[in-house]
Image 1 (tube, one colour):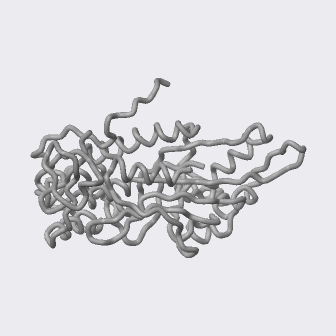
Image 2: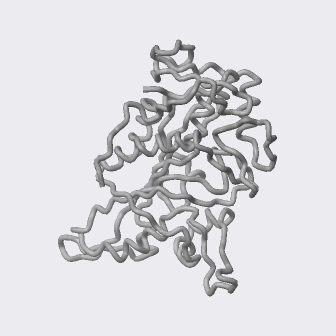
Image 3: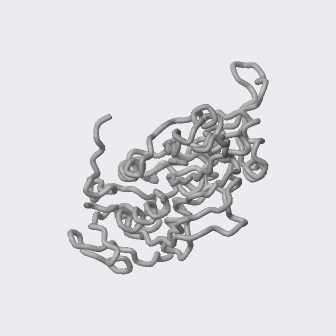
Length: 324
């Protein structure tokens, strides 16, 4: 694999200023990012990002862009970031929207590799018995699971879960790869799609299927990326017990501050402890010849961050993407 080059700005998109991106936002302005510019206007070519408070029209535009996949878009909408899919709660990410996601991937891939992580890919279909092995995990995810019960015209012997997250199947494979302390640490990442049967959906922010990365020191990288690359103010911290990831001991988060004074969960890191390793028997032999359960973390950022960029840098005059 060739060496990855870090672009001058991971969100630098060479688009025409007249390119329509949002239904109610017919223009695109490109400005240079600077945290010191947040809160005021900046002229093109100067440091700063215009982040004026959303007007009523802008709030309505943001709500229309995020409001629910239950409505069909009009043929004259002209939106070029995403469109609603034919299934409720799904979306089609169009080239400009996907270009933002690719820019996020390009930047974070470099950071992940700097910390020693390697990219892998795990199957999308997971045996239901895997989900059942960790009690709090199945309890937390059961309402959101999409299940496959028929394949090739025949009823399956065991129903399959369409990946809502990958901790279970990752641990199943870890038991085959980890035998000794010399096999640790094992640090992997995957870029994949996941499916969660959400009741209330919003394009980019909350959809039935979305793209993300998941891997097993990450909150600092997410925080730096949000501030320095996406020019989005975030508050890093720890989730309450009620909001902790199902199956984790603790969940850490970056909460992005939106123009409507609401917070958007933009990235998370979970301390899984030994919960999944005990459920799956993921053990290793330590230096003293004793069998020990591994300790694990997992962390993720998704296409929801694209929604955060749209809401943070869009207003009634358009969406401003960052230029290096």
